[in-house]
Amino acid sequence: MKQTDFFCIFALSGLGVALLPHAHGQGEAPRPNETQAKASAREIFGRRCSTCHGLDGRGSARGPSIVASPSVNSRSDRELFDIITHGLPRAGMPGFGLFLSPADIHALVEYLREAGKTTEGPPAKEDAAKGRALFFGKAGCSQCHMVGGEGGFLGSDLSDFGRHHSPAQVRLAILRPNDHLSPGKEAVAVITRDGGRWEGIVRNEDNFSLVLLDTKGVFHLLMKSELAGLERRPHSFMPDDYGSRLSPSELDALVSYLAGTKR
Image (cartoon, rainbow, N blue to C red; front, top):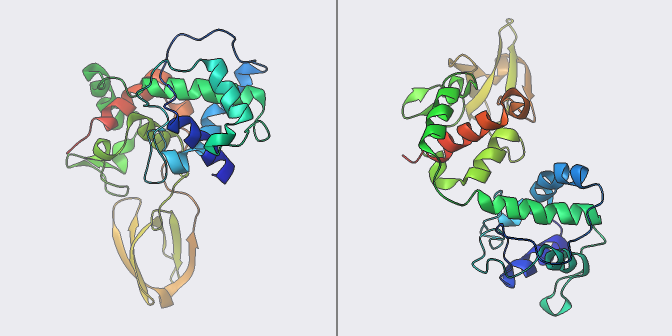
């Protein structure tokens, strides 16, 4: 996130701006190309804001919450639009109109208001039950991930994923699994000199050997001197097409299930 981006959103939060849904005030912000702008709002937020304010906008060690302010209904959409566009000099916030188009700014305001909705109330039990069926069925999550001792172990154990991640963070982790790929989680392909070929994740490695967990759940201890090739790929084994593989209601149900996992 650029420094100017941080100052802009930080200033909004510092003023106690309400970012939860409410009736719009008088004088709506201009809405050119609204449909296109809304489609990119999630990307704008993830690329510019989430590093400091968390994937769900509820804050992190680097920045405050911007979707759970207690001052609900204190600002209209028009006011938020003008603040982002022109800035607040006395608060150290520059005008943001140089970095985003009017349509993008309006879409970002709408996105933040919608993000606030995800903080209201616990997941519905019926959605969580449907999500569990998807996790162990159609979505195929259990082939790599485990919950409550059931499932695979190529991916991380998600038994308490909901304890440390909000529903919005869970959703982004599903839809964009490679955005914040941790070292050691990337896919690896190896070829040995005698013709052996495996793909998987490196579980342990030193200067002379590595332990590979392959996609079938089998461990291989390989000496590096015996390798003919070692390729580290800049992505995980998790599919990145769940936005098209699952319907919106199915995705909501899967998020509800994972957000409720708190071992």
